[in-house]
Length: 295
Image (cartoon, rainbow, N blue to C red):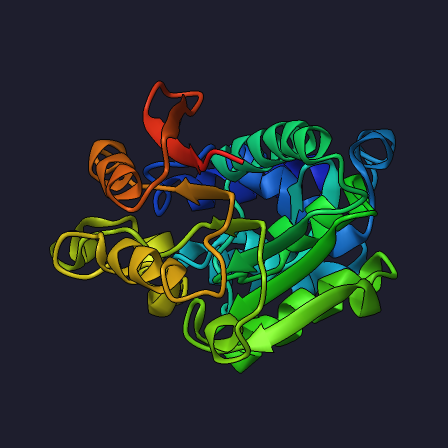
């Protein structure tokens, strides 16, 4: 694209350029997000300067951002951040990009956790997030419910670093316990007591990976996507490990893939969870399964 354009003209040309490579996203919206990122402005500032010349010292950065997006890189990785539950979180290719449906999991955990806490008449619940990725779940839970004792586990040291950096952003890094390991293994090894296990594990069947959008299959971490032959590998392992803890957690809360909620709920019932609840996402898909044990 030629230089010496107004910001509006640069936006229009970028939208046309990106439209050819983006079959599933709104090119105009993505162009605007990248403009705000490159120029360091919010939307109101962007509109205020809409007819001004594009800053010459930002042109190379703008071209690089467009090239990366045209090559299929998620806009969140280019910007280095994604909003979740009203807060901004750092993301990079070491972690899965937070999805809106996971906000529903957090809402459910907060609601049912508070109800459980009231039933137990306890000052705090002991909650652990398994496969924490960018740390959106433990950081959000701790900020929303400061009295809870929160832990977070991930197999990837790089992912844990991102999660800890996100906790630093909100000054709660030392208020969350960070553990590197395979699912519940660190907690089993020390026979820790846990009231609630939360997890959004990889749940995409291996054979479905090639059919994912390029932005996902080509850039997001495979460790956070591939759920094995049927997408249920991590749930099997988690539910086996739950039984190896010192005491079975009182509540399990999982995000699941399309068509998986029924099977995961049956497995929860088989190991003693009597109150099984399925929560639909905004598209009507059974997306979260919560199981409670009788107190």
